[in-house]
Image 1 (cartoon, rainbow, N blue to C red):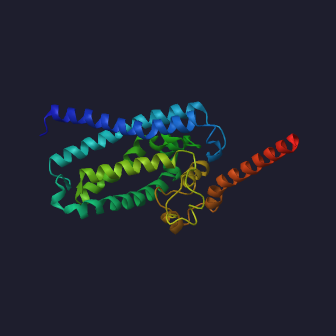
Image 2: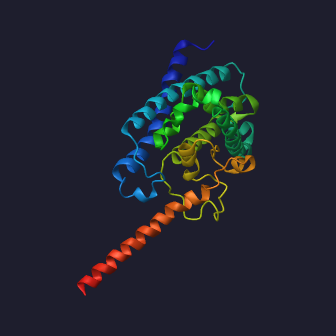
Image 3: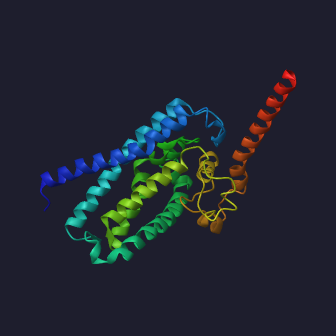
Amino acid sequence: MIPFSELAEYIVEDFIINTVIFGIMTIPAFVLLYMVFKDRFNLRKIQQKPRPASITRTEITYSVITLFVIVFLDVLTYIAQKHGYTKMYDNISDHGWLYFFATIPVLIVMHDTWFYFTHRLMHHPAIYKYVHKVHHLSTSPSPFAAFSFHPIEAVVQTGIYVIGVFIFPINFYALLIWQLFQMSMNVISHSGYGFYPKGFTKKSLFRFKTATTHHDQHHAKFNGNYSLYFTWWDRWMGTEFKDYHQAFDSIYERFDKAVKAETKVVAAAQEVEA
C-alpha cells in the first residue's frame, strides 16, 4: 500500500509539472501569434476569419480539465508501477541506450495510429455531439485548442501511453521525451499559422509529416485529415482533403500577391517623384 503522504506529494508534483509544461507550450505561442505579432504574421494565418474572444476562454477552460485528467492517469500509472503491474523501468542499463532511443519512435508511431482511428471514431454521429464536439468548438484553432477536450476524449487521447507501459518496457525519460514531442506537435498543429517552408507538403524530404494546414483544415471542414503526425493513414484510408496541398500553397500565393502589390506601390511612388 502506498502511503497517503507519498501519493499526495506525487499528485501535487505531477500537477505542477504538467501545468508548467502546458503553460510553456501554449502561453508564449498564443501571446506571440495572437497578440504581439498578430499583424506581422497576418499573411501566415491559415484561416483569415477573426476568432471570437469567447472561444479562447472555452479552450483554456477545457485545457485545464484535460490537465486534471492527465494527472489522474499519471496517478493510476504510478500506483500500477509501484505494485509491479507495469513494464516501466528506471535504469537505462537494464535494456541499454539503443533500446531506450528506439522506444521513442515506436511510441510516436503507436500514438499516430491510435490517434487516427480513435479520432475517426470520435466523429461517429453517436459520439461526436456528446464528446468530440467540444474540441471542434474551435473551428479556427489556437495553441490552447491543442488540449481543449471533453474529459472522455482527454482519457482516450492521453491514455495511449498508459496502454504502452503495460505492453513493453518503457523508461520514464523516454516517456517524457515523447510527451514533450507530442505536446509541441499538438500546439504547432493547432497554432492556426503556417510556418512550414514553401513546397513542404510536396517537395520536402519530410513531406509525409503533417503541416499545420493539415489539421487546421480538419477544424474548418470536420470530415477529413484525421491524422496527427504523419499523412500516411489519411492517404491510405482515402480521408485526406483533395485540396490539402493547394490550401498549403495558398499561404505563399498570398505572399506573392503582397510582394507584387508592394512593388507596384513603390514603382508608382518613384514615377511620381520623377
